[in-house]
Image (cartoon, rainbow over all chains, first blue to last red; front, side, top):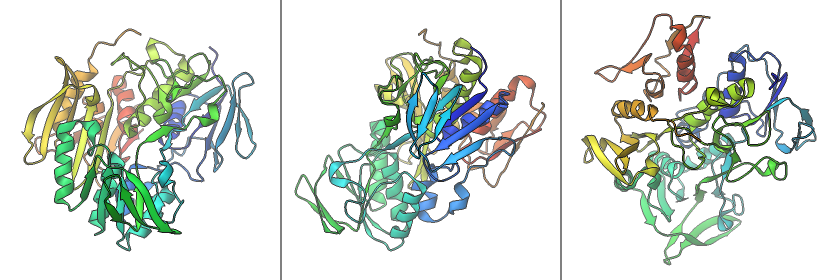
Amino acid sequence: MSTPRRILVVGASLAGLRAAEALRSEGFDGELTVLGAEPHMPYDRPPLSKDVLTGSMARADIDFRIPDDLNAEWLLGDAAAGLDVERRVVTSASGRRLGFDGLVIATGSAPRRLPLLEPGSLEGIVELRTVEDSLALRATLERKPRVVLVGCGFIGVEVASSARELGCEVDIVSLDPPLIVAGKLFSDVCSEMLLDHGVRMHIGRHVTEVHGDGRVEAVALDDGVRLEADVVVAAVGAFPVTDWLEGSGVPLDNGVVCDASCAVHGVPGVVAAGDVARWTNPLFGEAPMRIEHWTNAAEQAGAAARTLLHGSGQHTAFSSVPSFWSDHLGTRLQSVGLPLLADRLEVVDGSVQERRFVAVGYRGEEIVGATTYGMVRGLLRYRVQLGQREPVAS
Amino acid sequence: MPVRIHVDRDLCDLHGQCVLTAPELFRFDDNDELQYNEDEVPEALAAKARSAASVCPTSAIELRE
């Protein structure tokens, strides 16, 4: 393939920024444009459910540092609306037509919504994705409202932790136990910590009714329990933002379907990275995976950029040991690999009672991941071991 | 271009993503303090150094030419 002269990055968050940086550090000196739906330069999202909510980080603290020599044009506050792969043009919500030779799709993910809990359907029903969401929720939490959290994945548990730190009453309503993706052992420990921190848990339950006139006052659960609420935060997962690619010819199946090098199947000169990308990870073979971790967005964007410049193949394959972290309730959960694939967890270091331990996830005899509360150093050997897995031929 | 690693200790929050990504350049010592290669980064490890910087959750790692 010929080297592109004009590259367009769609998405101006972590993956978009890291892709732009990697394109330049790989020597791309052509025209570089970044299109972003939000009216902001790239900012860091993990603090939105933690330090920004509790007020220990200010708005300015979450802006990413942009390299002085990046030399990119930023088109912000304008979402991508369509892609014409034949003419190689992206159209935007405001009517822009942006031609490209190379395209990086990095539109990320958006919060899933529940019909009963559409944000803004009543005042006090909110979600958390953008900096505006976070700053608005912070202002609300300062008044010590009664908080009902729907969902207890990472965002839910982190918001619960932040809200308790601020002295709010917190009820969690969730079909699944907390952090169940980390495995039952970590979920159980997290449950105990939530209870210790005074969070009331309604597990296996869901919201059946929302009460309030203009502003939310209470929710009713399927077991008849009524929870008074000043604010209801829905945090029930995310879906990849691909609506703008419908009908474009880009293969979509729970994300943009890519090969092992993050090149979009069947569409030359187009790559994807971050929450939106579903690629075949050579280290884990199997089904293509889509990973919503911060670290994946950061690393995969570099890989996608290299593919755009150097072509798809073994030399640009993105072999990744996924990893994530979550700060909550005074501790840090960290994981490497894919503990989700594990059929059993074995504690190998530390003490579960002290909530400071490392557990290794096995599928049969094969190590597929390792997770810790509070002992990141204990993950290192497993990270190294997982990185040495034999790539699975695709 | 040869680079050196600089870690801003005020920003570093000991996530250890750099240690996980580039154990050749970063490590935890016995007191769980972060230690790193303060010499010029060997050419062969330059890409690893860049990866480590790009995955630092607090952007504490800077590569200086």
